[in-house]
Image (cartoon, rainbow, N blue to C red):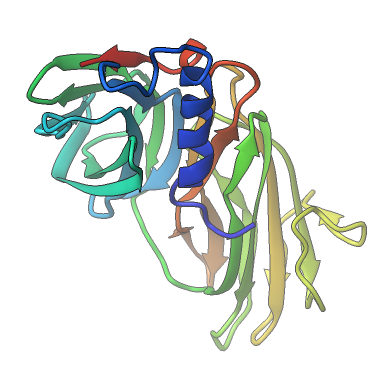
Amino acid sequence: MAIQGWFSRAAASAALLGVCAVSTACGSPTAPSQWMVINHWMIDAVTTKQVPLALQCLLIDVNPTSQSVVSSAQLQTPGLHTRSFSQQELQLANDTVEFQLHFNAVATRSIRGAEPTLTIATPNWTHTFSFGEMDVTLVPKRVGWLLPLRSFAGESGAFATSHLFAMVVKNPLPHAVTFDGFAVGGGVDVERTAYVVDPSNVFLTIPKQAKDLRAPISIAPGQTVALYCAFRQPSAYRNVYFQPALRLTYQGQSGFELTNPALYTETKFKGDPTAIYPTVNG
């Protein structure tokens, strides 16, 4: 379970191609270009005004033409400022092109229950889509008291609402650091927080020997701890951008240690993915 930045390209495009295969016209020289937007994102993050969110979206075009170009893309919601937009185009097959849309954005304030819109323009059409929901908590003080050793977060596969975020940290400081728990943006429900002190191995599920976090734990100098966070997102959102923070105390001072984002993405579809994700012809 490594950090999953993008869908398995073959999985998403094959699903769309499989739908097209049921039509005798799909894939023929006269078949129209069909675009599918992978949206329904639940964005739950803890950050500061200075640290950007690396938001992203996938756009797949079957039967591309010379006009199959993304001219621009805008991700908009109050409280979010997009610093830059970039894209990467990949040729998956003779009849499938994938556009990876990247947004480097900063939150200017804490955001609760916002519904960002994604406006995409090509030479043939311009449409605005729902991106999903965004819950972002801005914290006043970012610290770097613990050393992240390994991170196991993000996965791709069949749609699920329960997920696991896990990381291994070490205390490099001369005094103990207290871990008070995970801080989240507010859009997901934390079901369980657990830990293993000096783990001999790190698992992709919460191991049996893990202890539930019922009170703050002290991480001694030089000590290594595996931290686990099981969470659930609302079922209306198919894909999750999850970026929690560690609530810490050191020498009487409190602070938040930010983590890398984790993406949980749907790549295996039951039935027709175009019944879930919006499509545009042209």
